[in-house]
Image (cartoon, rainbow, N blue to C red; front, top):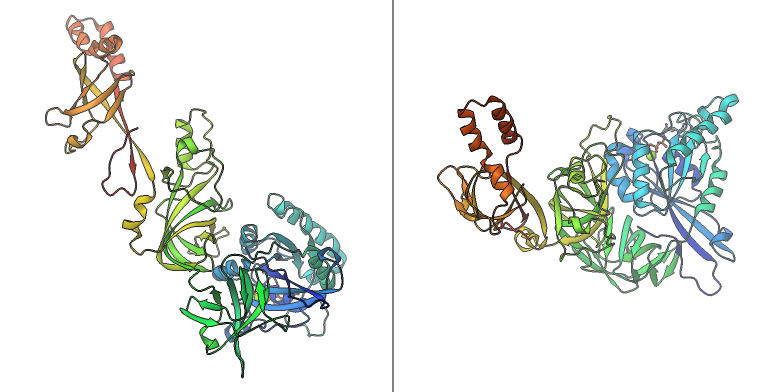
Length: 586
Ligand SMILES: Nc1nc2c(ncn2[C@@H]2O[C@H](COP(=O)(O)OP(=O)(O)OP(=O)(O)O)[C@@H](O)[C@H]2O)c(=O)[nH]1
Ligand SMILES: [Mg+2]
């Protein structure tokens, strides 16, 4: 998360200046760009819908940056000062969700723009999900109130406000402010002179919601660049938000996407030269001999502080609005920090003994063992139902933390512990469904291309295997012959020495094959119980009695025989990444 409220390094008497990044998110055509335009008094270096394709299609294709300045509200500190709200206008089109996720990661306060005549729409819901993952605070803006008939306007706004409050009830934005505006009354054809409605009230709401997030200058420097241009005689300026750490004049910064490193020649905040900037600051960084055309958006950082990874272990949570199951081996679009790639997932949970352990934040314990899951465990997932059966408490308790191994189709460059979002972007965008499937934190990246050999064997994820067979007959007091545990072609030799348990309670050890048809001999070190022996010899008695024509007895004993054969249970663990596929019993 970015913390981008920024106090420009002031001189002793300089007024305090604070920057807060405000995201403008919502469904396509809800009026985000119109709203950003109405809100901003000063346009920043990046304009609205700059791309020619964007203007031609009337939709926003990229993040737009603009800003407005107002006096510093009292809750942000004493004395005269200035609050700069940097508006980050996100696109609304479903296909641009990657850009929206990137935008959301640099904002402090989110505006969710809703077309008041339509209410929540598919991408409004997706934006709400992204906001819950990446943003601290939100303001809902009901736009286009000019389209409501004047006599019924107030009632309609109140109705929609109630509806939105209900929608937000179970989110972290419960009770957030809801404002009603018309950013562009009359729509596209209306003359520019028509004044927007409710915008000055909205500015007051934004001011009241602005806050100073925690700012931490430690750790590597990372900055999200949103604009890059050259100034004659000076060099190339990259503007953006410092996401972590700090930067000083003369520092080397790396542009990882281009694999080049440049020295910081000068810096500016609020049009004022500075020598230092830290997490949360909005700053322009000037370097020399760098063609601005090479970088439009992207990251710059302390040299070699980012990792380029082929796979990762993340801790994750399912997004509750995602309808499908999260299955191991499925492919997702995976946004790692500011990049999106295709990747395959494998889910795993704590081993049963650790199920209710306290979640570990920002760390992964390679000493621990983990249980492989075919599917992320959630209420109603197939494996959680199975889990319920095995669970002594019978409650089908869900673990407090779950993880996934991600294997990317191509390597991604990202900071440590960055945000990860998995989505199914190939879903039909007209299907009214949430495409965002899970979110989490990157705990361990694998930078080695050969991670399958070098790294994965360290990951102790195991499958519990259960095989079941039947006792065919008793050999003597200390051994029985079993069947149906192995296929005929199985090499029983590799199972020799493994422990089994009979359904009658005895422990046994597999001693070896018996005959040619997959049968095998089990030694019972403590001997068979007398009950078991009786039980296992009933069928032969049955035969002799049947021979005497005792029909009633035959019936009874064959019932016993077919209802409860003595079963043999073989349980062992196998580590998913053990190349030798060893079977392990405790
Ligand atoms: N009547 C009316 N029309 C509006 C208002 N605000 C925006 N519009 C119109 O709605 C259409 C969409 O506005 P934009 O601001 O481009 O919407 P957007 O949310 O930025 O769209 P994308 O960025 O493509 O998702 C345009 O034709 C606007 O003129 C409003 O308050 N009233
Ligand atoms: Mg727009």
